[in-house]
Length: 230
Image 1 (cartoon, rainbow, N blue to C red):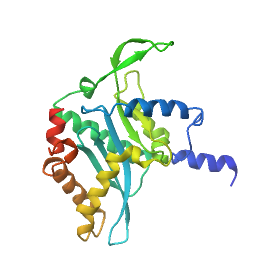
Image 2: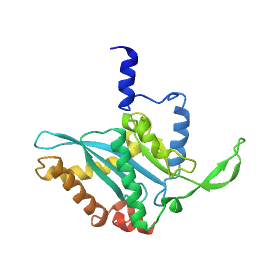
Image 3: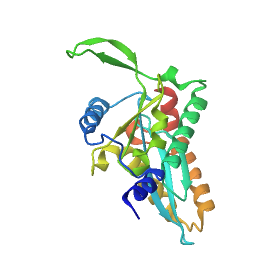
């Protein structure tokens, strides 16, 4: 096939890097430093999201997507899908926003976000402004495409996207640890035949993780309690 045909096929699947990707690398680095220079201690300041694969005994390979609040370790949403596309990542992120609003009893999650310094051209602090929630992901194709980017559009976005450094999964450590706990404490202990059974088990574990299982990083509280208190 011609180069233009291959390009169109890749673009439809969200597999092309955005234009100016290389030029934007310094901007992404600045965002990463700003997010992790002072680790957040309040909810809805930084979320982490990613996909993890799981093969059922029936032979199918499924993708588990989750969104975790960094400070409280609360799993806001989890989904099981046959693919790991931008639409799948976006759907999980939208569920996370809905869940946060439901738990906090808010009509708009923007009322619970933090403040950030507004820096002038000479580096001076001009004041404070509402800061969108930083959504941290890796550099997978689903997170670089146009579909996922729609979650961060608008004049007053609720969310902003921060990608980790290439080949640095530890930067997204909270979500990686969650997936490890999910698999070794729950999924690997039983026989999971198909996608429906996997979906039921990941949601069962999410309930246990959020409401029953204490977490050392949040003073042995359960994530649901920490999310409501912080």
